[in-house]
Length: 412
Image 1: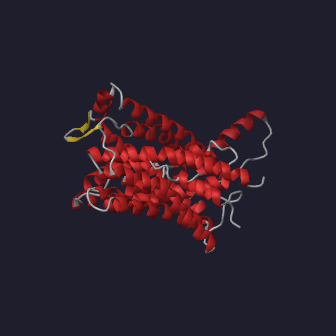
Image 2: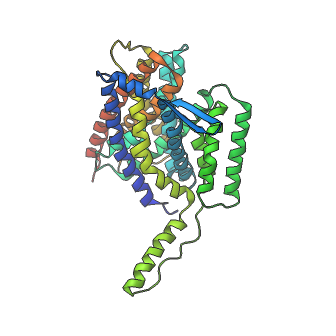
Image 3: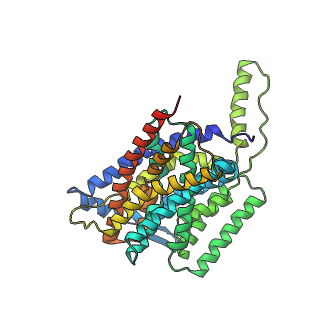
């Protein structure tokens, strides 16, 4: 049986995502509070403050909200791409039976919510929001699961793998269905830059800085091409090497205290050099994304003024998709995978726990708000935000209660 890859890194990832989920919640709560107080004008005005980047004759100007959604979220999508690549090539999704259960659950968790949304909103322009309830917020979901210290690691891994496959689905949906008119010249330049990045990988460039340096023009070309700028993060992640650096040599038998201290410092440096560029970048990005990028995104996007808001079919479709479609889709497709022998139930869990995880997957939040911003503007966007916030909160509570009840029934 193959050795489980990078258990320590995975544990650090789970802890980082869980803690980040709590910070995300408070940032969203603050935004919602400000949007419904006398400070609402200041809050909404802040989002529209123009910010310009000028270098000689070159100038790029956007409202602050779009810098957050286009540039900061590209960093988030870079991390998503790194996680996807690692999981598919060297992680949980490499093992067919574990991957089968997560992929089946994610497929159901994307298809059923989208169909339920379209059942409520079959015509345009409301139908454009079908992608909103497909998303799962891994930080929030793991944050809720972290409140249950007895939750088995297998259940956390299932939720993590499910959310990562879900993120892949969201990336494909954004690329295929929420992209404007394409500009051929910039699309060609983006492809050329991506080709150069892949060439760096191919010839064995192990340092990160050439990849990150080329990532800047890649982001600009993708932004101008008509594709959403955040996809540049995923494209960059594809080029980051997963292979390790020079082999780790290990310690000697040195016993002299001063020599041993020097040897330990050398070993720390050697361990860092032995890690792949992908692992080094993923490890470096995690705290910045969990404690910086996502809370900032939540603060700028979660604020919606309830005064005079008409809660119509868009809010209903989003809420129904997240609150009913997600748990139904995840549970039914996971059950079918188990029935057909395509997956294995995580150790220490039962079907009730899978249903609870299905509700936790209904916490759409970050990705759901992001896709809502691509699908709608004005009143429909506010409706979508209300649906996302209300359904995510309810799904989190129900998921927590169901998982806790399932753990009480599992024999110790």
